[in-house]
Image 1 (cartoon, rainbow, N blue to C red):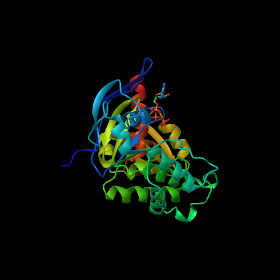
Image 2: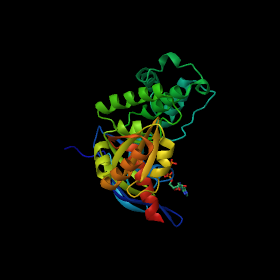
Image 3: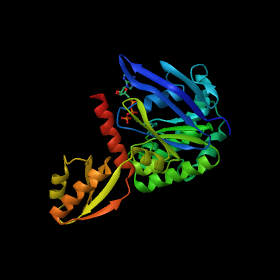
Image 4: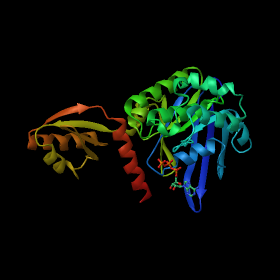
Length: 305
Ligand SMILES: Nc1ncnc2c1ncn2[C@@H]1O[C@H](COP(=O)(O)OP(=O)(O)OP(=O)(O)O)[C@@H](O)[C@H]1O
């Protein structure tokens, strides 16, 4: 097997007395798209910045694209494309002028801009002011800016926040096409559908990595059982289900109620009783990634308490 694109162990970062990243280890193979998920403030951006060579860990070690994260930060920065959460442009410059500025920063030749415009389908819009672009095109410009120096690894921090579904899909098609040619991608997101587009995911909470694997593996590892109650009185059913033994989560999905818990026998018994009491039918269902994340969030909170 080839050298991993990312292999970091026990990364730790404190701000003041607070440990915001706590012994996080991640391995990513070349060409993989790996998702990074977790609640707000859980340490995703801080971890990404340590792996990009922008922030020095207080403890831990590892290599990114073969370079030591503690000693070769300059080399990492040259070979990584980092799209920050709130990417910004000169709004009163055109697309081409913005890319020209970035090319200057990296010391790239002028034809890098022409090539990148063509590569990202931006040539026909090259003279449009960045400030006048829609969210989807702004995001494409941000992607162009971080691909222009031909990085081997892309770190994307919530790249599609606030972008419409069609633009998000186009973005993901673009990412998959590039991964197929060997680009490695680490992407943080709060969107479940995006997590499902990744080859593997990492879930971090309160600075600790608490689940890793393919979506199917993460769902299986959570050991949850889900049943659906379908009937006329779901609001009443929800009230009856809350605080019943075996019921960890109850959530409305349209006209259905999803009932989720770790103790399958207790869950089914509670759901069956409430279904009978409210005239609902009970249907076995697959546990979703969102159900798992809600459960993990609750479990992490309980551990902190
Ligand atoms: N430079 C800093 N100084 C002090 N605290 C910081 C600094 N950077 C981040 N933090 C804190 O560290 C914690 C982790 O932040 P981080 O941005 O890594 O989380 P995140 O998972 O990326 O969150 P989000 O999903 O909201 O983007 C937060 O509580 C944040 O306030």
